[in-house]
Length: 396
Ligand code: PLP
Image (tube, rainbow, N blue to C red; front, side, top):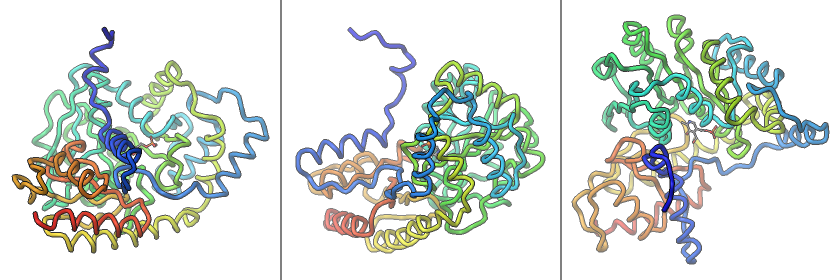
């Protein structure tokens, strides 16, 4: 008998990690799997950041850090927010955490009471719904489609708000759709939120620098939204530092204080060496990492060109991040190579088993007609993967 809490029993396993595990299993059986399921840059952390970490080790940074982060790191974050986002925060408003994932979990734990509703424009990043549920909140999905560029309208937002709505969470650039909300679109959403002053906004900007159209805008830049927005960011994606586990928030002081209190009982401060390295990362000009963004941009073109050659994939042109999120409902109800395809999970599994290409079902992100394909992979891998998918679907 296993004695586990209802909390963990009702939590869904991360479907991106589940797909990666399945792909690994096939790999171990000798199958040549191309992994396009994980949200992870295929670059190494830039040398100047690695050197800062080595220096920190040699300088004996090995003790517990302040729970909410080294003061020097907070100052680097404050400068970054000012430089990149025109946002003014002071030290009392910054909390450094073990990845943006912990930042989000902190916010959910300190803001939600049982039954509080959190609006999640679809598609949303996999963990949002599970983190909200863990904090006894209720995720409320706002659906979108490929035809509306996977963006919600002010009318949809208004219609989704109830007396129980406590927060709105979204990412822009969006994982998984790659779409970026413009300043005007955010203003239209802010105009709705203005009428509902009890709703707090979580703006997840972790893909900020991986933006091919320019024009990143933070919700907190609107004066009337500043006091009710938590800006979440981190170094995992743009700096190719997923394993270093550093994320952070800029927030109203009372929320930052609560996150600090929560973190103080759960993990204490984030890793000391990683924090020192991130000071260097954030102080560097953004141009230091543009070589990676340029690569993602050319891969985006490559994968879109190749996907367009395959009938049945309907996709937007992603504006940021490193995913395409095609609608593949064309294949629903079809039997292909003995596989009955009824939904996106069937299709994603079909691609894994017949084309040996790992993707993630859109179900995981609240859009059951789509799949997510990551193009954080080499051009050769992208070409080969698209060739295999085309071949597998030849008779569909
Ligand atoms: N937010 C979004 C939208 C993400 O895609 C991810 C990572 O996949 C995270 C947050 C978490 O990032 P971190 O590695 O900093 O925990």
